[in-house]
Image 1 (cartoon, helix red, strand yellow):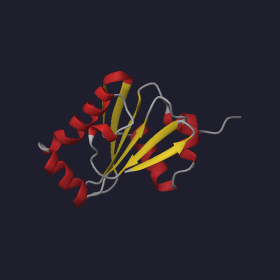
Image 2 (cartoon, one colour):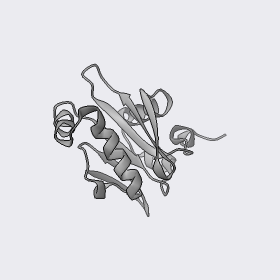
Image 3 (cartoon, rainbow, N blue to C red):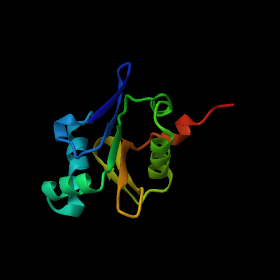
Image 4 (cartoon, helix red, strand yellow):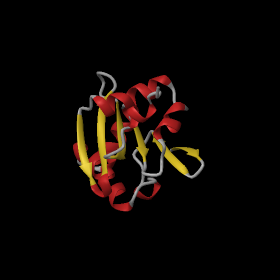
Length: 131
């Protein structure tokens, strides 16, 4: 599990299916996220096994984050995957507490990046330079 701490703001970058209490999200949102991650596989064990076999990434941006600051510290590859999840997702699910989960598939094997963020937050747009 990874945390990027910038003051009191926290963006999480995870490479395994988390426990609900590990997510820096409102409880109802964390429950919804976990349900959506497990749903295509039927069980938590099968979902966890898929993530081991085909590494996926879960990026959680909460309402206290400033995306332009947090994203500036990420690798180009991860920033690009977040941009795809924001602008060209495979799907978007609107979940509780004003959040959404989107997915981008990053290769033919099925690896992917899941992005959880406040619905009204434009992650990539906030990262663009201003004139």
